[in-house]
Length: 405
Image (cartoon, rainbow, N blue to C red):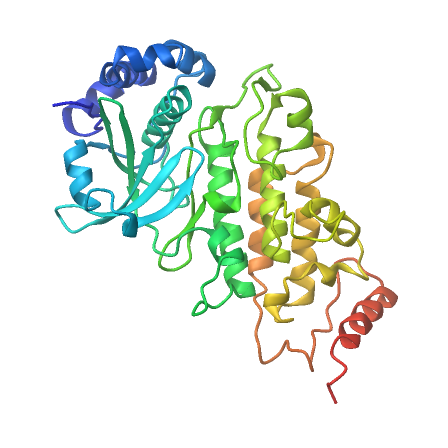
């Protein structure tokens, strides 16, 4: 049967434990290479070069977490059947690497099937990286890989289905019957995404640099729990005396850390900057880069910086769709966290675990409509603000709600 199978269970697991992670990884690498035609590998500069790009030989991975993912091999016939021959009505997403379809497996399980572009190197690279990463990594806030297909020129990945789509969808592409995300849901999403990133940076061994963190890659389940997806650009972080990974600049415009964009030196702090952009999107409801905005305001960070650290004007960041329904102190706290993540100096940006801890504190102060509304705003101001600054914040809030008695 075409394709390859990577399963971690039973006797094979005991072998993995005995041979440790290096031998296991090389077994997985061998299976992956055998599944891809030689012509495809030649176009992608050989499997060894792809693995060198990941620095996998330098840092052999081992399965992370208590229940390592298992990946099932599918045939193209099975996946065509699951998607009704990749019918356009089942298309749920499209991006630079390919298209995503909703599908139904024979056991009635609903899945998302990503069909990678057949344009050679980039598709093969992403396929290899994503399969390897998702086999090794396991966390509630990372999307689960169910299986894959590597048949002839086809490269497909099968994931758990996320019924609420992406964070990007809910911020910018609401249908008429959809409600915008409320404050508490936004914080829930921010916290879950931060936990997923903290797992990659601080638990995975060696650490993993996501390199493509953006609202489009944060998927939402039926309860709006977020899961990071799309690991095709991921890299292993430097360990020991190394401070960075030198690599070709990749990612999405508007999310890329300026230090990485200018030097090609990639660190975990590059991800922190990207996460800061996502936090700013959650606060403001504005895209990372939007040509429809006024001249000079197309770049979200450029527009937001004057407000992020201004206790008198920070509420101007608020998404109009929130309609003022958010608590002032937690809003300011999240703005401060965002500002730190977006700091121009990488070493000042906080670690992912510290970001998650800080957002958890914000989440502990939920918005309650009956005690925090336009006519009865919270009396709490920004952290560490003086009584004079507290008054200024409240006055600014009340000026926007002059209809109150």
